[in-house]
Each structure stands twice: as C-alpha cells, then as structure tokens.
Length: 135
Image: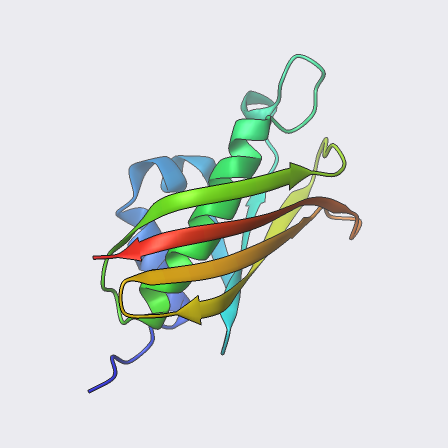
C-alpha cells in the first residue's frame, strides 16, 4: 500500500521537530504533486561578511527542500542526504528566498530531486541536484 503524502500543515509541523531548520525559519508554503516550495526570510545573522545570504544557509535551504519533499511524499518515512550538487548564481541580500523542489525519481532505496532558488524579486540565486537514501 502506497503511503499517504503529507500536506503543508503536516510538513510545517515536521519542521518544528527539526531544530536547525526551525532555527532558519524554514516554512513550506505550497505542496505540489512533484514536490514543494520552501521559504525563509533573510535575517542579518544569516548573512556573510559581504552582507549577502551565507552560502551555508542556501545549501541548508536546498537540502531541506528536497529532504522534506521526499519525506512528505513517503508519508513521513525518513530519508538522509547522500549527495548534493549546488550552483550559486546570484547573491541575495534581503527579503524572502524560495526554494522550489521537484522530485525527479523516488525509487526503493534512493530519491533524486532538483531545486531552483529565487529571491523576493524572482531572480534565480541557486540551483541544485540532490540524492537521498530512503531509510
């Protein structure tokens, strides 16, 4: 029997149980058949010495976007990151950043997803491809 996918409310409740993701202020804003949109507000403590969003925050955002999409698609079953390829395209300095995760393949042992990240003006700031091990 295929598990029932989690909705946005359930996924946001799941984020509350993930201390680091909760600390970043991540929030699921929309769930799609093939993934979700995750967003966070750029805060001063999330910036680097140049005043732009720290690359580690962007990496965490894309990792969480696909990870939460995978977990949600599998009804809450756990998964863990195996590999991540991330390209930074443009710096973000303020406002919200949104990560649109798309699940490309969810198999028996692995899942692959892509993410496009945009700033509050709609500019592409990053793109990534991730692989997860299904636990």
